[in-house]
Amino acid sequence: MKELIKYIAQSLVDNPDKVDVTEIAGEQSSVIELRVAKEDLGKVIGKQGRTAKAIRTILSAASTKIHKRALLEIIE
Image (cartoon, rainbow, N blue to C red):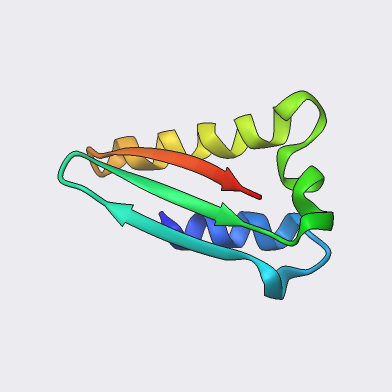
């Protein structure tokens, strides 16, 4: 999951080297924290949060395959 989010985020931003993804894994779920450069934050969130929602949808579909729940948090 971590690699998937990192790949998507690096494809969207101008500074792909500043993308940082950490995963906090639990038994039933995991929280994935995404940090990008301040100037790239709008590109990851998108207009009215559409890009962030799309990333969360992809993450949800991928996590269903491994029978685990995943949450994406975009951190400033």
